[in-house]
Length: 309
Ligand SMILES: Cc1cc2nc3c(=O)[nH]c(=O)nc-3n(C[C@H](O)[C@H](O)[C@H](O)COP(=O)(O)OP(=O)(O)OC[C@H]3O[C@@H](n4cnc5c(N)ncnc54)[C@H](O)[C@@H]3O)c2cc1C
Image 1 (cartoon, rainbow, N blue to C red):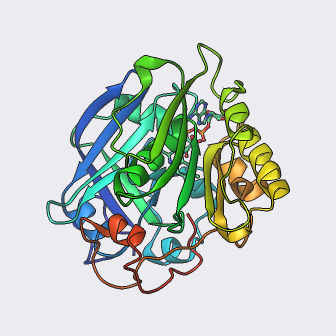
Image 2 (image 1 turned 135 degrees about the horizontal axis):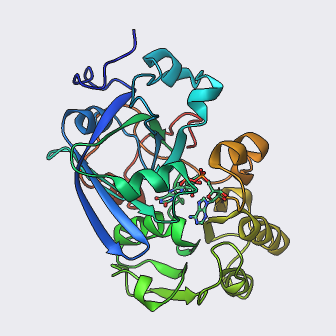
């Protein structure tokens, strides 16, 4: 049976429907949408971070939201798949049942971007699933992200232990697109500006990433990269050349210039490679407000199954 978008989903069940509670512009290019209510509670009833699969409404709303069976097994139809997009859970509060997603505003060419542009309190979208991988706790960490990876990078930075060392390279268009960062003292945060170049065409992030001096590439360093496909592929080649073990990398293309997420996922699985990084969320039990922090503190028991996005 297809769940009605207007009824509260059963406990812990997916898919579920998220309702917009607030729309907050963090910068001119980054819009936070805060969701709240029963659908969020259902989503947060199980450990489903750091990423979420959103199902964007079509002309008739969410009437064709995939069934629970389709969502569980990713057996959505091609038409449904074309309306699925992956985003980062930027923040959540399981007790208050709120969840924040930060959308890059890249105009009307994208389904999700266009939706976010018009989102108002009361609007709804579907959540089909979530989960994913996080950098493993390691003494030195590099985060390399363009605008799309900034929400994930900032969430990670906020949760790192006080003694963490490393660097975050964050690409945005200019200083007015930077956001406040909470990071341990030993992690340098460097904003890089593409100064009017179209997203995905500047080399500023790539050059900075290729110029990084990794203190201990063969053992202790961890590299997390979330950016446009071209940057991701070039950085992976470089990191491999340096001998960084696969388990110390989490390098994922968040988008590719000129094609939709659906096409990118189908053609090359977002440039993913098997065996990178690990997932350390407990499989059962509710998400706690400090779940991410517990991961980095090493207080986690089991690995999530292969739901790497
Ligand atoms: C694990 C993961 C987490 C992600 N988290 C976030 C997040 O928190 N916030 C976020 O904004 N994005 C995030 N992304 C990236 C996001 O899924 C893609 O940008 C996606 O393509 C956006 O969907 P859309 O419907 O707006 O555009 P699509 O319909 O997929 O694409 C339409 C066109 O827009 C272009 N395009 C897509 N993204 C951008 C962009 N950012 N700038 C310029 N052109 C673009 C495409 O190349 C294409 O030509 C994440 C991706 C992954 C894999």
